[in-house]
Figure 1 (cartoon, rainbow, N blue to C red):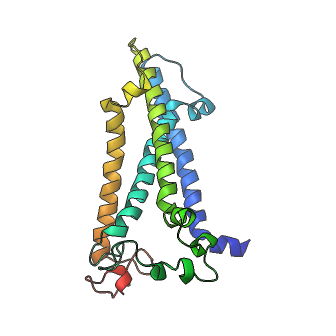
Figure 2 (figure 1 turned 135 degrees about the vertical axis):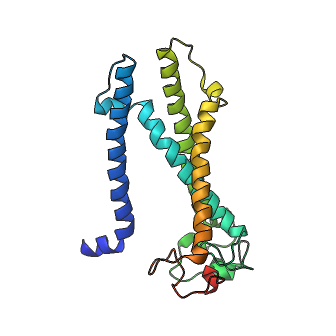
Figure 3 (figure 1 turned 90 degrees about the vertical axis):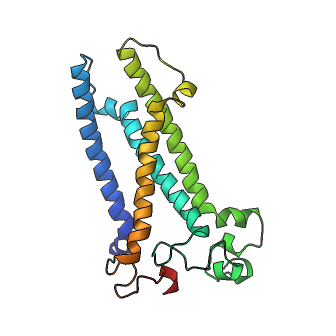
Length: 225
């Protein structure tokens, strides 16, 4: 058990933080939701009912989808784009998919390489070569769909509370309400990634793989050191 905890401590730490903050969000969200319900003379929700509500689902999924988009786009962009001096960039001149030898696939695979990396050119190896971005895109589109449905239900609930007509899902998708919720998350994620790319040129965190060595020159790109 101690070995398992040590070898997986990073993922376990963030799993614990995730579950803790998700629980805290649900408590704060329920309270804020019920305060608004009382203000409008509507019935309050118990905790279990709130967890299944569109209000909570929307609040969670609109953040999840932007995170998956951020990582998928960053993983793809760093194949082709570089930033001199950044720890988040490949070495200048290494743009592109690189050779089979550099990527250790096919006849250049190690004995301990994943089975699909040892395959010759074909669909299965191509899928594995791009599996990180593909899976994150699946998560992105699934959570974006979930966000659109929960936000649509929440929007229609508000419409009915104000004695206004509900609208269809496809109509909601072109409404400013949906895109304002979506784009406010996208822009913050892109800002965070761009800031990280630039800050790792000049700033350091000793011992972190997300940072260059403390004494590395600013002009030294991560993989060139």
